[in-house]
Length: 453
Image 1 (tube, rainbow, N blue to C red):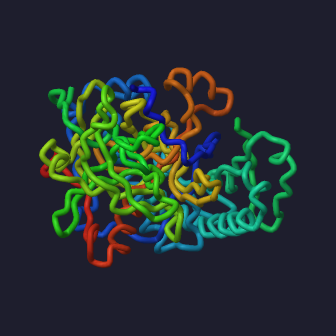
Image 2 (tube, rainbow, N blue to C red; image 1 turned 135 degrees about the vertical axis):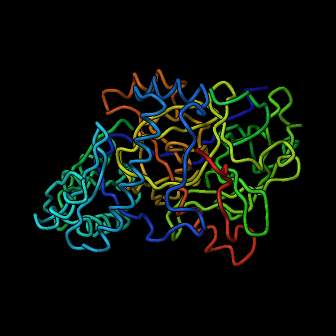
């Protein structure tokens, strides 16, 4: 019966070769609608689940303490860079953590650099400001949008590389890709060619676990397969509704604005899988350029524990979420997902725009961040964390067709390794609240564990 379950294939994209140092800037210019403290506490190192500890050692070569420390340092850098940019908008040129974990802030003149040094950060002199690179990205995005679909299809993503003051354009290694005549009025463009411990095990559905959905009823005789995705972060709104945030493209009716039921799969009897909720909202592209869905959970899901601030990783062990965070280049991240469980990596680009193609062939612009964590088909919608803070949900990757991460790492090593696209949680929350009209999703927050430490 497992053969009836088809991984979600309605959206496809390629992500590879993202810049190693990318502009640190708010993606949407809006913050989370929440009373959460600026620097939420995280769990202690000995509270991390064993599966996550294993993934940190295997994928990052880090101890739990090193992981938590670097994640916290990234958020401190983010706060400083945001304030510095507000005070020096014409000279701020980006910020990132080096592979060794050192915080760097780039400026376009030496005087601004002295302010950075006085604050205890390393400096980097850049020829183009963050605003200049962002303006170039907008121009390039507009140019790509004006191209015929047959010409623009090989372009998978654009990232801002602040260290080298350039845009990084990922283009499929095809004849059409080679013939692209890039505009010269924008900033320098680099083209990258890519191939087309933690407590007891809990056997209850939660973030990171599998769910299935279908445009048709599971008992429909015409049903030939179902879509598989992963739950993201358990959340609640001002009215107390139990919600889960996952990927928008996981809703099989996202193209027509319809909804669909969500089930925990019974692999021995798919038609009789228990229903745990419905898609209350799904966004793919649109004004916010996001990929997210809001699943309204039913009493069955709540009674099973999906009103708790937890996500699951390897071997069933769980991680409690203590707050939210924003992507910072160089920050360590780990993700959960039904296919590859806990895998870890680093944020390789915190400002990426990519084109996702729906099943109907319609192109949608998605704005998010890139990481080197391996994600597979079916991991879409799963939770991405930095430390024990919610960072985003998985949208796609260049390894979606691989059977496992070992093979993905081997096959993609010549092209820069695995790369995944995440959609940041704070803009998602802000968009849900802003478009709620005071109804479901108004005042939404991610469920968190209080008094962490």
